[in-house]
Image (cartoon, rainbow, N blue to C red; front, top):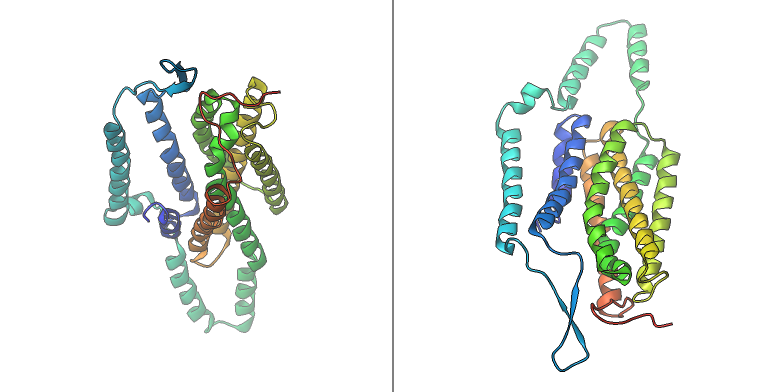
Length: 318
């Protein structure tokens, strides 16, 4: 429950801070996958399964190398990340660090100033009132249709990236070898930090580019779905070319999906004038998870649409 509601709570909490600090949340999300990956590498879990022949049998059984430290130590490290997050929240909530950094959003102060201006304008000539109101309308805000479009795009992207594809990783990658799955698990957490860096340098993204990137992202996801559906013998199975193909496609899709998520979040935070914009933005992430995990679970466990590849077994005879 805590993990499923984190995006909803965190993004809604960020309405209290300036827009530029929203990237800190995205960086934290990136580190939640990057740090465990580093721990896994330090743990020394091998990327290749060793097949050993059984005694008095022609069958092969998989053998896995022992990790450098136990699962208990790994979980203690993960708990340390959660404790660090708690300390960070305490510092934000009950210390003066936000005031010292001048990181708080100015909505409340601006509303108070605007109320004062309205009271003063009532005593001014009509011409001055018209000029002031005209200048206030010149500020550009996100239209309601564009806001709903961004929410729909974020829901669909979350459905694909967080709801559907994680469950299909073994079906799409293991046909190309255990090393392909291992390198994918190492490279994938790098995509989100790279997307964050890309969003820093590419701050202004047009609406047409966001839509085109979403369509491109859906095409890549469709390709991964096709590969997973063809498991255990997809195109170029058991080849280096196939492994490079699926890892590259998945990495580009994750990079594009992360960039879209960050860009849409920044646009809503800076342009949507309602305070509940980030709440709805976080809600679309959870809605996407719901819309993605349930159908994939039914397809895998009820209908058996996807067939996984077992280690140390021969497939794809031609």
